[in-house]
View 1: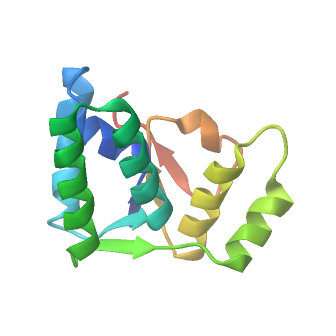
View 2: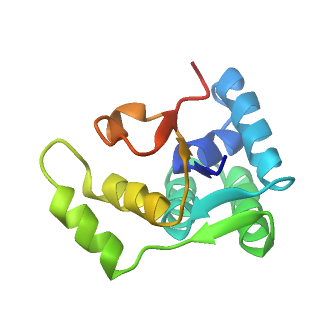
View 3: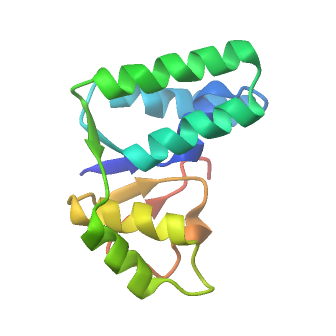
Length: 137
C-alpha cells in the first residue's frame, strides 16, 4: 500500500501540545524514514509555513530539520502537481471542497497513492478512489 502523509500529521510530529497525537504522528513520520512513504511538495511547503506561524523557535528549528531530512531521504517519495493536476482540481472544485485539498488529492491519485493519512478526513469526503485514514481515531 502506498500512503501519502498530510501536512497535519507532520505538524503533530513536532507540536507536543496534544501528547497522544504527538506520539502517533512521530511514529508515522519515523516510519517514513524506514519504508516508502509519499509526501507532496505542497505538504512540505505547508508544513514549514504553518510551523513558522505556530511553533516556538526551537520547534521551528526541529520542523526545518525534519523537512530537510524528508527532502534528502530516499524512502520518502516526493511528488508534485502539474497542469493536469490543476485541471482535475479545477474541474472538481466547488463550495464543498477546498481547492488546495483537491490539489493534494489529485497529486496523490496521479502518482498511484492508495491512501492519504490525515486528521482532516472531512476534507476528502466524497472523493472515493483513495482511502482516507485518520490515525487518531
